[in-house]
Amino acid sequence: GEDVEQSLFLSVREGDSSVINCTYTDSSSTYLYWYKQEPGAGLQLLTYIFSNMDMKQDQRLTVLLNKKDKHLSLRIADTQTGDSAIYFCAERRSNSGYALNFGKGTSLLVTP
Amino acid sequence: DAGVIQSPRHEVTEMGQEVTLRCKPISGHNSLFWYRQTMMRGLELLIYFNNNVPIDDSGMPEDRFSAKMPNASFSTLKIQPSEPRDSAVYFCASSHLTGELFFGEGSRLTVL
Image 1 (cartoon, rainbow over the protein chains, first blue to last red):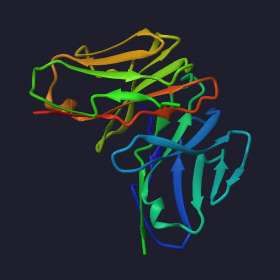
Image 2 (cartoon, rainbow over the protein chains, first blue to last red):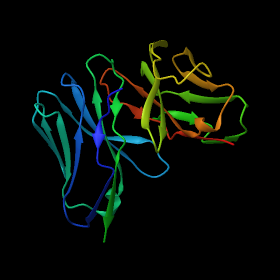
Image 3 (tube, rainbow over the protein chains, first blue to last red):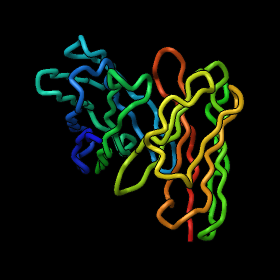
Image 4 (cartoon, chains in turn purple, orange):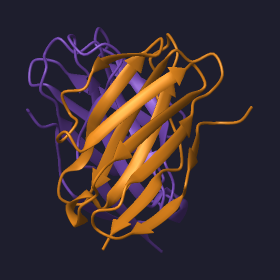
């Protein structure tokens, strides 16, 4: 099947901003999501954006959506060491009910 | 409230043995998903159920894999016979009408 694409690794210094990028596959996707996975745990929803929005801000998190390019980004302001985790982009395709199509995840490392 | 509960958390078995993974979704959720996570392929949707009925099983790798949902509070994923390439973390997730997926902690399977 088609892949949701993400870069595999990102390293930032504590206090800097992190930007994680994603390219999704279905221009008709209704919702796009960012999930976080800490070691040995399941995925937890961080935030989501509806496809008719360009931007969503939630405390330190900012999501930008470019539907024309099918590009999604997650910006984490003032990144902390506790933000180190794997971040997954996911799309809800128009023809897949509630099932989500995930990228392979971006491993974020925050160094002191 | 209890989240999605999966068992066992870890399983080590020998090639050819039958493996059964179990999941209890969040009460009131009407959709249940089984995903498999590996380093190479990331998160793959295996199957999902809506109101206990399998909707899409196109991700099930082959006939060795089967999944059931006999009632709204229980699902199993069975592999028979198991092979080393089945080694992965298997996640169960459930959702209600909001579409947000709630994940369990995962079952880490190692087939020797």
